[in-house]
Image (cartoon, rainbow, N blue to C red; front, side):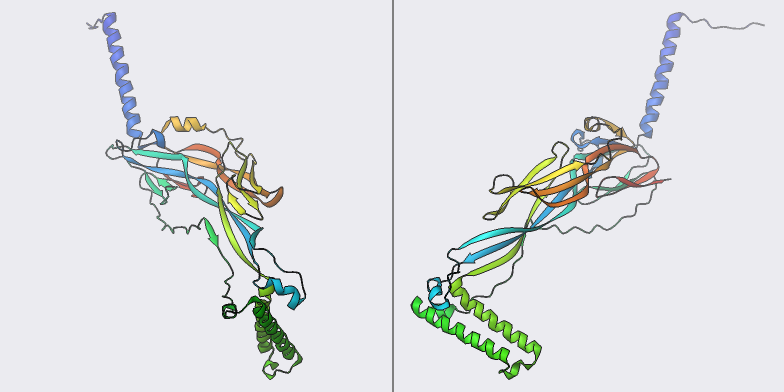
Length: 374
C-alpha cells in the first residue's frame, strides 16, 4: 500500500498559516460588523451628514426659584401741608418712593436637555438587521429605545406651559374719585377745607348707619356693604392729607442649573429699596443656593465623562443614575427654603446593552425604569 504524503517547505507552511489566520480574522470582523446594529457616540464626535442616525439627550435638572415680593409704593398726599390743621395729626407721608419685602420663595425642578449628555445613534445598513426604534420628546430627551419587533407605545406629548421669566400680579386700584375736585381750579387751601367737610359728612353717615337711623341697613348684608363703601370713601379722602400706600404682589423668577464643580451659587441680590436683582451685580444681600450631594452614587464604578465622550459603543445606549442632594436657599444668613432634591447632572453616566429588547427611560432623570427582553 502506497501512501502519498505531500511535502511543503517551511516558507510554504508559513504562508498557509498566515492565510488561514487572516481568513479567520476576517470572518470574525465580518461577524462582529453584522452583529453591530447601531453605534452610540458622543454628540461632538458625530458626523450626521455622513451617517444614518439621530440625536438623543439625557435630562439635566434646573431649579426654578419663584420669589414672592411685596412692592409698596408710597404717594405723598397733595394736601399734606394741611393735615395738622384739619386732622390734627402730624403722622403722614412726607416722601414718595417704593419699598420691597421678601414674602416667600417656591422651588420647582425642571428637566431640560443636557448638552454634556447628548449622543448620536448611527444605524447600520445591513439587510435583514433590525434598527433601533427611538422615541424622544420634542426637546430631544429620550423616552424609550427598542430593537427587533418591540412594539412601541407612543404617548402623546403634552407641551409644558413655561412660566414667563417675570410674572407680576397686583391689586387693581380704581382711579381716584376726587380728580374732579382737584381740577376745579381752586387753591389747595380751599380744596383742603372742602375735603375736610367731606370727611366729616362721611363720618356722620357712618354714625347714623351704626345707630340704626338708616332704615335700609336693617339687613346685615346690606349694612356691611354700606359701611364698607363709606369707609372706602373716607380712606380715599384721608389719603389726600395723609398720602397713600399701594401694595401689590410680584413674582420674580430665577433659574439655577447646578454643576459638579460649584456647590455654592450666588444667584441674585435683594434689598428693600431695589428689590430683587438677578445675578451678582445688584445692591443688597446675596441670595445663595447651597447644594450638598448625599453620595448616593458614590459606590458606583462608572466610566469617567472623558471616557464616555471619547468612545463609541456598539449596540449600547448611555443612561444616567441621578444624585440626591440637600438644597438650601438663603438670604442674609436666613434660610428661605431647604429641601432634598434629585439632581441629574451630579450623578453618573452608565452604558446599557440593547439586543432584542426595549428600554424605557425616566424623562425627568434619564434613568432606565423598565427593560423588556424578547
